[in-house]
Length: 114
Length: 116
Image (cartoon, rainbow over all chains, first blue to last red; front, top):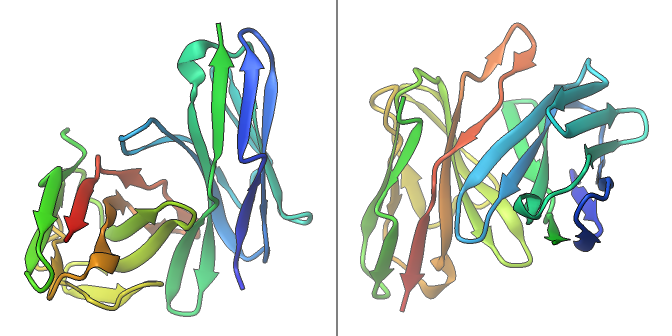
């Protein structure tokens, strides 16, 4: 079964700290892996997309890596700020016979304390 | 671009009622999909479409119908609402699969549905 797992479920850090969020996925037959941010009561905002042939992507203070062989992705946030507080979701887009399926982890709830 | 829009933002239904959740995108995306988000279960795919006139079932399709008559619109119909369909519904769109790369998916703001 295709599954995506995120650890930890919740993380609280002081402002300015660098941090890493972890995502693991079963089955390496993926098109890509996408990281999202979700604020309470809001929709999902796409942060970074890593194609299966890529190793990492960077956007500002965010860096996401992908290791298909081990089934792992990490999201690195540098110099965290209170505004980074949100739930971070990773999703693997699996290849299927009749198309594709985006499978989500349950998210890591991040709190950055001033 | 307005991106992906969803209406309504909130809806309360009684058991047995039917309704349609609207989703539209103005990015000329071929791929559109519907998800529901429930506590402890994450987001799960209900139905998806790879282009106008083409739809397929996702992980949890029972109780929902979709159609795709235009590239822009992808409505989700609840045939006879049940309390188990209380959830937050998200619509997403993407350019889809192009030369072995699948483009990123963009999500709408969601519709919060309560069925009593």
